[in-house]
Image 1 (cartoon, one colour):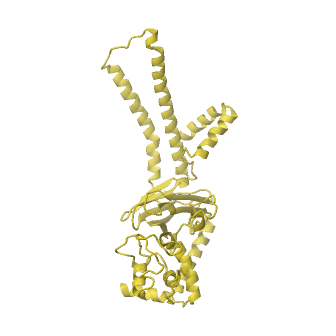
Image 2 (cartoon, rainbow, N blue to C red):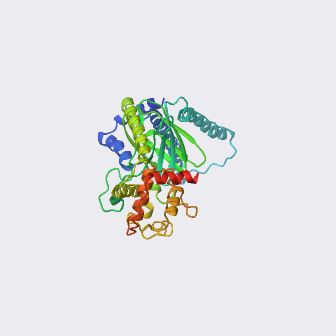
Image 3 (cartoon, rainbow, N blue to C red):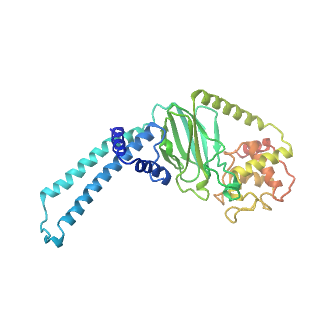
Length: 382
């Protein structure tokens, strides 16, 4: 029904001059005044439903205002017409009650079917747990060892207007979500701290991520490609810096990626037993700091006091090691903006970033922390 209506509209549009049709086709994309058609069956059905309801509203508006304008023009005072004096017309009351009711019922039929499809998360081929953090996303592929954080990867120089902004400005991540094409993927969406919203327009998926609750959504992408989205709920200082990238790949490529990620997870666990050199810790720590700490504490370590204190010369980075370990692993009870990175980063990454903080920005403490030190610290805290 919906697709038939759109074909009818296309035939009507064909009767217009070519320049008019071209302008109509390009304007929504250029101005962003219409929702995207999407790449999934649900997304396309939603788009068709949206256009159907839109044109019904256009027809109703044209009819109602047409009758109003015609009546005002045809029965204007200059032609000698007198206003009719009547009220409580049963026939009129029935007409303007029954007709809108019938229209609403006819609109509700396809809308109800579409909503049923949107909420049908049963019989999924793959489950992915999505957890919103300030300000990143964590993805756990249930039933496997694959788990990772996805962070904004737009260069800081572009954000600070030191370099030209590329076409995917603030829509790039270091780790995209990878899904197989042709498979039903169920998303279990929650949050660790505040309310977020996981939104990918091309997939027609938008769900709130609420601490303590798990919302469900699903998708089935039929064509390989990269689809981008953003957090759609104002969640704090860097709300605009937590994009989403979904990469749909053929099944064989997906299996290969899954095996690779599982191998990387095993390798990461092995790093806990490795002893790093001071230079290795500094290099790795700078990378971890830039991805996870610089947004709040700034690239130069000066912070944005008082909410985001400086690392340079701070009592934490130049004080007792135990206190430094505690605030990075467990967060700060006095300042909720300082998250607990123990569940977010590997022991190797935590060891590296603490070593970096204690030796960068003029701190020069000369300390080194090894991954095994972080593991022992965590075990002793349990």
